[in-house]
Image (cartoon, rainbow, N blue to C red; front, side, top):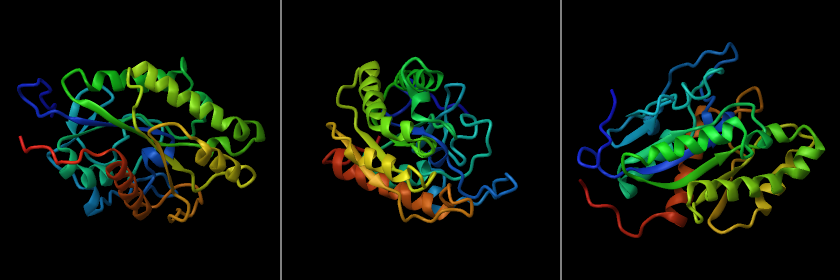
Length: 251
């Protein structure tokens, strides 16, 4: 069902872009045989005030798996987006999620001019056409940059350029960015990428740490339980750093 998006028909959406690679798109509950088990924890249940922008640019009721039509070449499961949205909706009102993450992608694939970057920016621009404001970009990426020294050493520069480009192209110079420091990847350069993530020192950029959250048996992807916890960590960071002081009036 498409949700009406005219200002007369819908409350103003508070929009959050979900981007990065597979741990943002979600592999929680995806078995080694590449099937999603269909288990949706209570924290990730649908709610009438949580919407998602589909691949066809329609606002639909949000439900797991959020990235099924975006990270479409892989089997998607539970990610952090729904537990995040359920945790912030009472403070921010109607939540609009814009899934953009694609598994197995390196930071260089998110450079300005590349397909993934331009698709994300295009979806973000489309998301505000019916009313609403982009509140933050949630970013979880970096595992694909842990295999080679050059990629790991270039990560900070590439990520800072990505942040500056997104803000410029969306006309939002102070857009909040909540970045997740990776919890997995190639051990050769994983710590170097993590160090780069923590070194980023730009205004309105917050880094939270996924290290220690439970991983699936592949030692790469977060479990369903871990994704629920990550969503709450993202919500806590958002509300502590960027939330309005007063909850919105109920429509």
